[in-house]
Every structure is written in C-alpha cells, then in structure tokens.
Amino acid sequence: MAGKMEPELLEVGTDAPDFTLASSLGDPFTLSELRGRKNVCLIFYAQDGEGEYVRRLGEVVSDRDRFIAADVERVGINPGSLASQRRFAESQGLDIPLLVDADLAVARLYGAAEPGGDRVLPAVYLVDRGGKIVFAARGHPKADRVLGALEE
Image 1 (cartoon, rainbow, N blue to C red):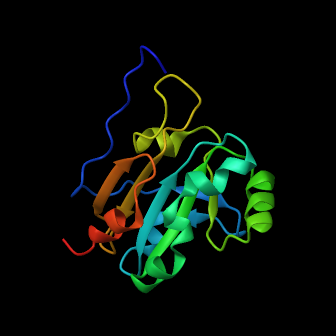
Image 2: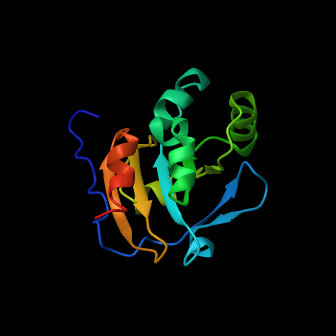
C-alpha cells in the first residue's frame, strides 16, 4: 500500500450508512432492519486465506458471550464468495453472518477499502440501536474497547 493514503473512517456520532448484502446464513442482511432492536458490530476483514480468518475477526468473534450480553449482533464483511463464506463459517463453527461485499462497495462506503485497489483494510465499527456509529477503529481492536463505546 506504499504511496496510497488510507481513506478516513466514518466519524463517531454519524448515522451508519445502510446496506444490504448476501449472508452466509441465507437471507440477505440489511443493516437498517436491526435499527431499534440491536446494536451491530461490523467487522471488515481481509480475505488472505482461511487459516487467517479467525485471527483477523479477532476478539469480536472469540468473545461471543460478552457481545451477546451487550445485545450486539456481530457481522463479518469481506469480498469472499458466498460459497467460501459458508464453508468457512461451517468449518469454524461461527454463529455470525459473514457478508459478501464482492465489489467492496460497502467497504469503500465505510472507509475500509484500499483506495483504487481491491483489498479490505481491516476495520471495526459499532452501530448502536439508533443507527449511530459509536465506535470506529482500524485493525482488530480488543473487545473491551469496542464494548466500552456502549457505556460512553
């Protein structure tokens, strides 16, 4: 990524842009359908090989019980095919939807795609029940940081 600037993440306090993507769980996932009902954690992660997926999804996936207790729906997003998302979710016993952002349109909307490129820049967002972004960070933040945004 030398010579390319990273796009800005969306600002905390702004409305989360709505989107609909195919999901490994079957039905399409539309962010706004959870408005008023659940907090949502969006995990944009690179697709570098199945061995890396769980590590890249990080504590947001491994700390399942804490996120469920905080009424947070966790969602993974990358450009992998629906078939590869389903295989991966099944092989890892994941209980979260993995969404297919084949053209990186949603990743670009959220500042989580390489400018002019075809790679995801890992990022995590937490959207509250009202549809506002309450947390945004690059990389793989710890669960405490992500969940702490609900307490602020």
